[in-house]
Image (tube, rainbow, N blue to C red; front, side, top):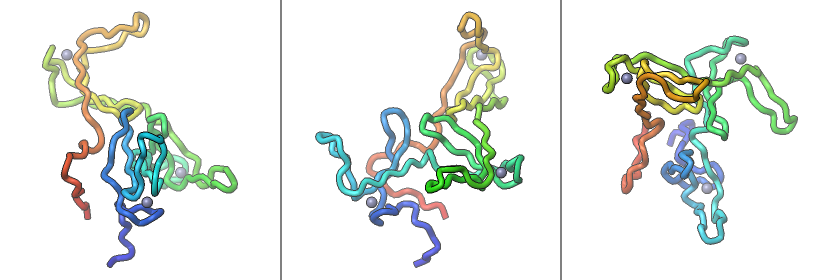
Length: 178
Ligand SMILES: [Zn+2]
Ligand SMILES: [Zn+2]
Ligand SMILES: [Zn+2]
């Protein structure tokens, strides 16, 4: 047994294996401890109450912090918005104050030109990432008129699914990425 290998699929509270990632009706992903369950009748958790929110765990980025040069991480807040923060920054729960580097930058979304053309009008497609991390393909000939609050030009939009593919029924063997 390699003690240094962190078992990602083990409950830190009771060491039971974690259940596969499930999705809430609002689209957020969570992972519960297999020793716990949710009683729909009493609306209370039974057994182990550990819940992990994979989407809220910081993802390391290639970018460097402009303040201190450490790596940035991308993290998601409960409202679903993403922000970039410095990996050396933290929160001291006892002192109730920020520690380390306090650099943060709200992620406002990005646009990227694709090598694909719009099936409606043959203009270039753009890959748009929204501030909540959702991705869509959108026609570059389309726009938004703020005054009339109406879409202008080509209205072609294709939403792309993000994150991990939905857990397939019956297959609970997650690929172990070494
Ligand atoms: Zn547990
Ligand atoms: Zn920093
Ligand atoms: Zn178009």
